[in-house]
Image (tube, rainbow, N blue to C red; front, side, top):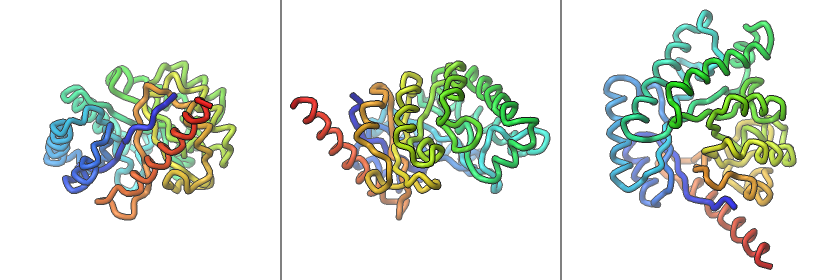
Length: 280
């Protein structure tokens, strides 16, 4: 069974890093932003990776920047209509893969986001299916470049969502290394715990990384584990035991990861209860 290990998320800011490292996490995930891809920002990010590694952290994930000039970094964005955004996604992915090669770390790219923006982008294609194929073609290319150092995270949008078995089968057919955000799937299923469990079981062999996060199942709320409607006891045995994970929780204070720690304590309590039941 999957054993909860402490995975924390923060930026390349030294105060945030030190706040997380004092807890000796198994995984540190860098939340990057557009500023990390200026010449000085990129050098700063490289130094931050080396610093985290110098503190004994071997599992490091670089999360692709979420936004660019007010837009989500949606890979479905057509080059013709969104040339600057398209190029930003291309160049930043290339830069992250270079860091992954140099420092033996992992890169996470979103297969999609959510909201009116992505709906507008999808509507620029002849059909939702053609939009999906455009996403797959782009992710296929990123896979060839990043090989076993890149993974793709699920969206809540009509493209690259883990909600429908047929779409999941198509994703699996590409042999991607998957990042599974629990809340995104749960929200896409409108709070259906059984549907979430089915997706987790179906995709588990391809999942290399989890974002463990609770939700009410209505909107992107990123709640501390145990405060939403995800039923975590059935979830835990369905997670790939060889995957890494982090707690991707909204923080009251970005310099204090307490909500991530609270989530870990909650999941460890669930794991202890499950082990006790197995023994009995």
